[in-house]
Amino acid sequence: MIIFFILLLLFLFLPFLCFPNCSNPEGYVDVLIVLGCPTYANGQMSLTQKMRVEKAAKVIQKYHIPVCIMTGGKAHNEYSEAHVMAQYLKTLIDIDPLLEDKSTTTYENMKYCQKLCQEHHYQKIGILTSGYHTNRAYAMSKKFFDDVTMFSAPYRFTIKKMIREYLSRFQYIYIEIKNWLKR
Image 1: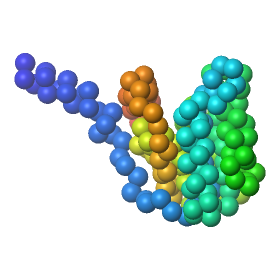
Image 2: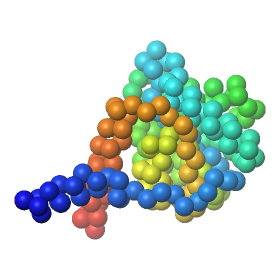
Image 3: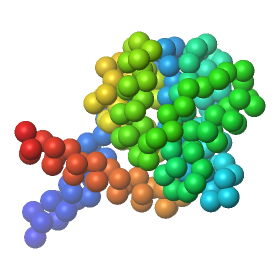
Image 4: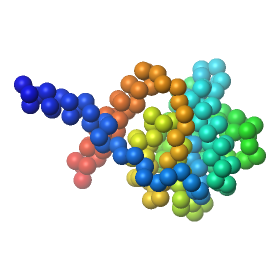
């Protein structure tokens, strides 16, 4: 019974154990990638989007980052996350961000941004997302980029967000194990 309890605890904590923190401190990068998140069904920005974009504006100004890529397609409704966030960013600072508006998942954000970064020869990559999402996003980013710095945006804590992130971590672990077994 004790062994079962220990295995159950390990299983429950697996999503926390498998995702390391990014060791690079915030600083200058060649490009800042801002990960998307859904807009409201009526096309208005979500609070999470606003917090990410506002943090992006501060980071771009503080570290004099020359290029920003906004990510996110029409994952949850008819509105492109990248377009909505880019419009708001332009009201905060004078920048014309690149758009990656085909993705519907974090993994696709990384995959499509990798192509953009290779085309433009960006080496030092910054990725900005909400604090609860940084560890999983960092784990994914290491598959696509060699030099990654994570930037954490503030977020409003909700049980729904935490459960979704927890389950998404399990899903990503499952995908990685499946890919590893195929080798």
